[in-house]
Length: 131
Image (tube, rainbow, N blue to C red; front, side):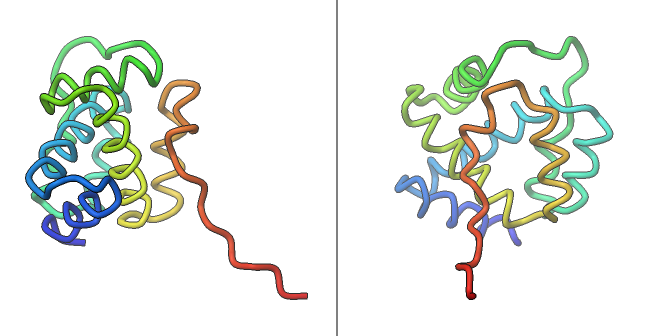
């Protein structure tokens, strides 16, 4: 999935302008890079277009702590939006990421996120049961 398509998907899901969706996408990826291991960040980046993978380079220093609320506040601060917009954006970015990478890679990434984070990830739709 190319960067423009990724951002358009985030924009559509979050019902945000494309420019704001791009800013939030960058903020989410940068914040994810702070939360997951360097190896996991590299694995995730390998499955994304270059325009997105560059945001997954973890900055040197301490790994931030805190749960999903702290994550939202960091994204909101980075993107220059209020936390409610950040939450909608984070959900949209994570859903789009889930479609852009393999299931195993997405599950590996989510497994490294703080407790309570799974509530921000929409469940994977299951096909209807045909009996």
